[in-house]
Each structure stands twice: as structure tokens, then as C-alpha cells.
Image (cartoon, rainbow, N blue to C red; front, side, top):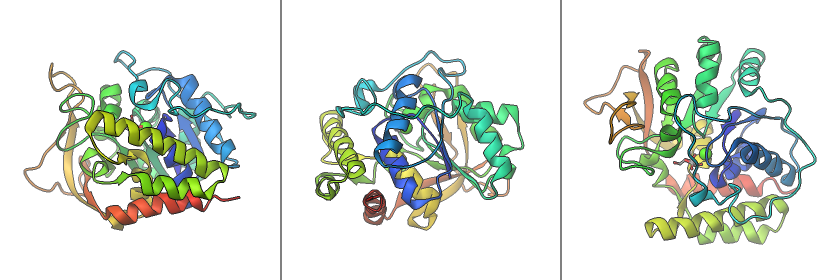
Length: 305
Ligand code: BDR
Ligand code: CA
């Protein structure tokens, strides 16, 4: 697995989840929840906290066309909530995330690309080499929704942050899996998961507990929920354990022009798309939430040194 991400509270927990659940060969970073300096530093801090040796390649510092937006009101000014982010001894392996994604797709058979931030790096990689999807075992994205949004009434953050990039990815990456708000909002982690992590008392588990605490607090303030969707970790689980999720193949396109609807994933719900056609996306709709939640927590706990 290669994760493209913008840590971000849930991205950080996704990295920890993937480090146990998959053979995580690399991390690429993108501007998103916070700026590229923060997202790259945060990725390095997460892997060092967990004692992992995984290369981090820095990627796009701005969207393809859209002005830069962020989600620091959700993830905190640094992207990792109120966590006191440690100094890191490592540095990015390169500033060429796109080149790294393409290299890995050529050198590793069966690579699964999991993109949980704005899709800028992935779109640039597809533009540089349209054969990329054919060399991958799969592409899973956290983004979009068949119904609703979280930045606007109809747009989810990762799509809204770079709609032009998302439109390229949905068009040029046939067969991708979309882990959108339809399913991530059904997988909420809360106090009991936080307690399991905190009681484990090793650095990566405590980090995850701190991140979860912040996410739960923000989710309560913003939505009145008692738990928080850890969207990106759910996407990691969906990539590795697809049998835990329900979904339908649909045609999906991204609205680029609507004054009210820019950044919307327009999901054709009039019937299933033919999964063998180029335009089909597997849109996840439901999950065995208790098992997905346990898988996330158990994966972080399995990182105990
Ligand atoms: C997505 O947006 C970001 O804020 C999160 O990290 C997640 O990838 C949820 O809409
Ligand atoms: Ca993210």
C-alpha cells in the first residue's frame, strides 16, 4: 500500500492503521487540511513516533486551479489537534511525490494506492502517465458523497479542495473505490476506543488517543455527535478488508461549475454501472461498523514496540 495524505487527525490514524494492516511502502503528502510543510512534517512525526521506517515524499503545495483552502478549524492549526508535535530527525525522501508514486507502481506488483487527501498528486500522476491505473491492484479514495457534504451542503472536503484534480481521477482511474461520507459517517470512534488506546500507554497509541480526543470534541461541537468519523482510517480498512463494506458500481463525475454545487460528486443512482466500463466507481454505502472500528483500534495497538 502507498498512502497519499494530508495529516490531519484522521490521516495520522490512517497511517498507523495501515502500518499494521498492510505492507506500507511509502507515504506521499499533499496540501489539504493544512499546508504542505505541516502535512509533511506531521507524516514524518507520526512514523517516528511509531518507530516505523517508511519513506515520506512531499507532494503538491497547492491545488491545480482552485485557491488553497484548509481545514485547520477541524484539525487544529498544525493539523494534529492539540498534540505537542515532536521534533523529527528524518526529512522527506524527496519533493517528488508524483515521481515516487509512478516509480512504485512500476517496481511493486499489486500496489494499492490509498488517497485520503485532496487528489492533486494523483491527478498529476495520471496526467504524467495515463497507464498508472493499469499497473495498480487498486485505487481507494476517501472523498465525496452520494448524498450531502461537509464543506458545503453537497461537497466533501477532499473533493472541494481540488475539484479539477478529483474530476481527472474519477475520469481516468477506472474501477476506483470511493469511500465517501455516506459510509464514513456510519463509522464513529468515541470514548471507549480512546480509552483502549490511552491505556496501552505506548507512544503511537497515546498519539492516536490524543488525536481521537480532539476529533471527538470537534465532532461534538460541530455536529452534536458523541463520536467522530475517522474517515481516512476507514478508507485504509476498506482497501484491505473490502468484504466489511457494501457498495455499488456507479458513474461518478465531479461538478466544476455550479455556483452552489462546485465540488459535488454527482453519483448516478439510476442503476448500477457496468463495472467493466471505464467510468464505473465502486461507491461504498455501508459497513460493518463495529468490526471496522475494532480493526482500526486493534491495528494501532498492534504497533506496540
Ligand atoms: C476528509 O477531509 C479531511 O479533512 C479529512 O482528513 C478527510 O480526509 C473528510 O472529509
Ligand atoms: Ca485527509
